[in-house]
Amino acid sequence: MPEGHSIHRLAGRHAELFVGDKVQAASPQGRFAEGAARLSGTVLDGTEAYGKHLLHHYAHELTLHVHLGLYGRFADGPGEPPPPVGQVRLRLTSDAYWLDLRGPTACELLTPPEVAALRHRLGPDPLRADADPSRAYARISRSPTPLAALLLDQSVVAGTGLIFVTEALFRAGLPPLLPGRELTPALWRELWADLVALMTRAVEAGRIDTVRDAHLPEVTGRAPRVDRHGGEVYVYRRPGQPCHVCGDEVRRGTLTGRNLYWCPTCQA
Ligand SMILES: [Zn+2]
Image (cartoon, rainbow, N blue to C red; front, side):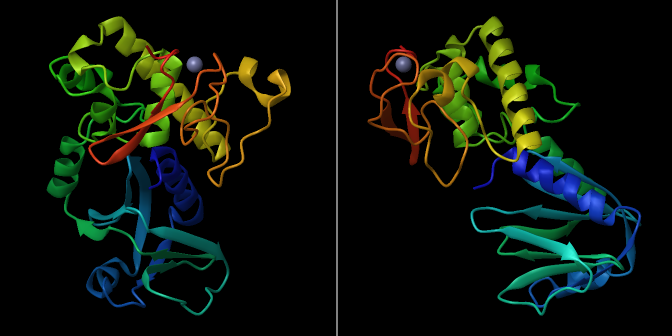
C-alpha cells in the first residue's frame, strides 16, 4: 500500500494538472457514473492529502475522496486520453490533460460534514503544516499497545506505513514492541521530528531513503540494496541480513498480521 508521501505527491501533481480548470469526468467502468456526472463541468479549486487519503475540492462544495488501498493506481498524461483499458473507475479530462484512476478502495463524493468527519477520525499527518503531534502522544502515552502498532494506526498518526514506522523506530533505537505508555515525551518529540524529516524527503525524492550518510554503500563499501521499492533502508524487508550499524542479524516478526523488522542490538 502506498505510504503518505505518495499521496502528497499525487495531490501536488493533480493540482499542477487541473487546479483552476473546468474538468470533464466519466466512469468508463460505470461504478462511479453518478459521481462523475456530478463532477463533470465543475472547476477544481484545490487538492489535499491527509494521511493516505486524497481529496479534490471542486466548486459548489463538492469533494472527491480517493483511497487507493492496495491496488489503486493513477495514470495521467497530456492531450487526448488513450482509449480506456481495464477498469477505469474515474477519468478526468481538461483541455490539456487526462487522469485515470483504477482499482481504488474508495472513490466517492463527500459533503463538507463528511470531509470534517474524515479529518476527525485521522491522527496528525507528519506531512501537514497543521499537524498537532501532541494529539498522537495523548493516545500513545496512555496505551499498553506496542509502539509499532500505534504508529501504524491511522487514527493515531496518519500517512505512516510499515516502511516509515519500522525505519523510524530503528533510527530512534526503539524496540517495535515497546508499550506506547513507556515512550517519554522527549523520545516522542524526536520520533515525530524524524518522521517529518523522512517523509518530507520522500515527497521530494519520490522514494523512501532512511539510511544516514555514514551507512551508505559508497561510504561503507557494502552492496547497495536491490528491491523493487528502491531506496536505502536499515531493516525493512532485510530479515537475516546484517544490520548496517552493528552487524547483528535483522529480525522479522509479526504484529496483528503484519511483518515487523528490527535489529535486536540497536533496538534493545
Ligand atoms: Zn544493529
